[in-house]
Length: 88
Image (cartoon, rainbow, N blue to C red; front, side, top):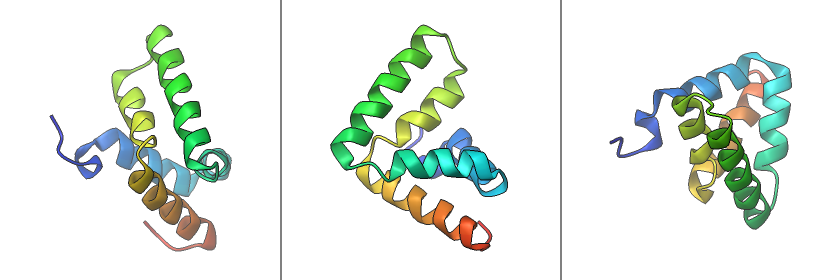
C-alpha cells in the first residue's frame, strides 16, 4: 500500500494530464477551489459514483486523494503553476 500520494502513479498522471489539457486543468481547478467541506463532499460522492460504475481502480484512487486538504492544496499549486506555463 502506498505511503504517500507521490507513490500513487495514477495521481501523478492525473496532474500531468491537467498540465497538458486545459479542459482537465479547468475542471480540477474548479473542484480544488471549493471550500474544504464542499470539496470533500463532492469527492466522496464522485468516488461512490465511480465505484458503482466500476471505474478503473487507479482512477478512483487518484480522485480519492483530492479529499485530503493538504493533497488538494498541493494539487492546486501544481495546476496553477501549469496554467502559468511552468512545468511540472
